[in-house]
Image 1 (tube, rainbow, N blue to C red):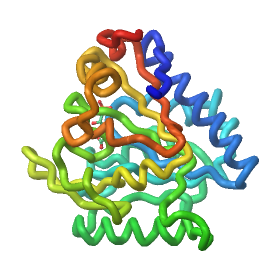
Image 2: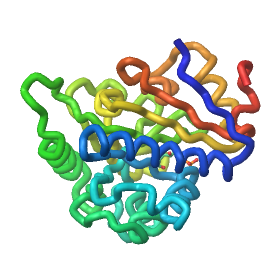
Image 3: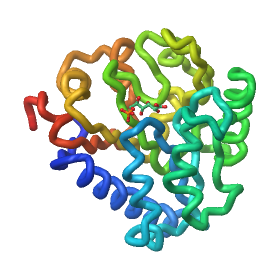
Image 4: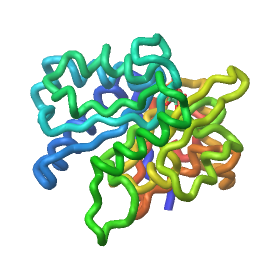
Amino acid sequence: MSPPVRIHPDLKSLSRAAAEHLVALATEAVSERDRFSVALSGGATPRETYALLASPAFALLVPWTQVHIFWGDERCVPPDHPDSNYRMAWETLLRHVPIPADHIHRMRGEMDPREAARDYEKRLRALFALSPEEPDLPRFDLVLLGMGRDGHTASLFPNSQALRESKRWVVAQEVEPQAAWRLTLTPIAINAARLVTFLVSGRDKSEMLQRVLEGASRPEELPAQSIRPADSKLAWMVDRAAASALERA
Ligand code: 6PG
């Protein structure tokens, strides 16, 4: 069954809807489990959503003292580097809201990449201290993802080793052609989430979005297709420009 795709007129309305989505999920998770664990996406698309969540209209609606922030991926750069996903979230959202500092679980991009991946997985295992009967996977309440024009998501790039990872929750990847290193949750860790929501905006994503949602299943070539959470808790929130090539739009 294909996942639900909600189409919004533009990035502004998509961002507002995404902020409302996060508030609703946080409220529900905290009322049920006293905690909301969300893995944020990097890139440009979610910036406006994060800024909205920090604005007076939304900030007071989120139970920040019970929110735990993680990342789906990170560039292997220091936290104050312009390319850091942590820095983007810190500047647009986290520095403006009363979230306890020890609830912000950034991937340590400044470390040796492979060591940083092991370190983050170790911290996830401690934070998601699973009861014995639970499957050995992290249960994020929400993983927020973007999608690149090449169909990548998080830092899962086409034909990359990480797509075939069957044990580790976090891996380090050298990403061509920039030969830059990145850290990423693996599909098994993302797919264990209660809900995965993609935010996609812009006409430059339309052809890829049509292939990912309506084309043949080629997850190695189109990593966004490797995101298939159990009991299909997957949602796509897109703007009209990104949806312009969809047959179903
Ligand atoms: C990153 C993201 C990446 C991003 C896509 C879309 O670290 O850059 O995790 O997966 O979501 O590349 O990026 P835009 O939102 O900038 O188009």
